Image (cartoon, rainbow, N blue to C red; front, side, top):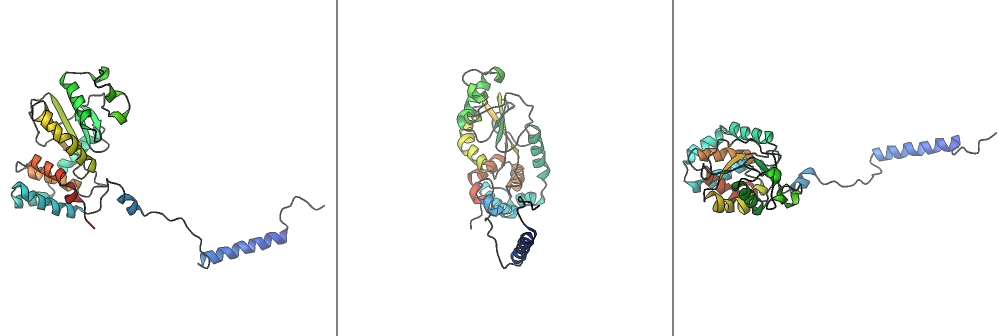
Length: 265
């Protein structure tokens, strides 16, 4: 008896198979084209990321050398130091220490060993510093800084754990006897680090560093995968430091970041 539930008879199945094969041949040969969804090239997508900038290390080095002429350095000595790469291992050591401390990105600042991540506003640092100056305990934080340990990073956040952090080999900014120590892990090409410098560090210097309450150490954490000039800038800072101009170079770069690292079209 004929099976009434059979969907395709043998002749129809053969005919359908032939049509499918013919279509496949036409498509593969380019006679018929199928529209594909357009994809944004990876390079173009990266261009929209403020952390990612086009250019080369050589481009950054040339601009750095041009900028430091304003610092009164021995240019030949500075250029030789930077071109030799002799400071690269020191930068690498900073970065390794940062990773051990839990630094995942830049900027990251440890206030007496307590980690603050990101370009937090001045008030976050002010409140945390004032709390440290009066000997506060972050495990039992009082109402003045409770928002910094409430688990909501949108309000600003500081790590309760006190980490053992080294000052590094770069010169200190401020009174070495100051009771509050800031250790900043940063990247000279990072736009968020520039923001922290301009919006927070400059004011902290005026209110706390210059008044002897706080000292600041800068340690390098170049994000070399996205910042082509960050490593050489960190090396250059140390080369300038050899001539007693470390902090002058530091300020110069953050005040002229775009002209040093961003290549105009």
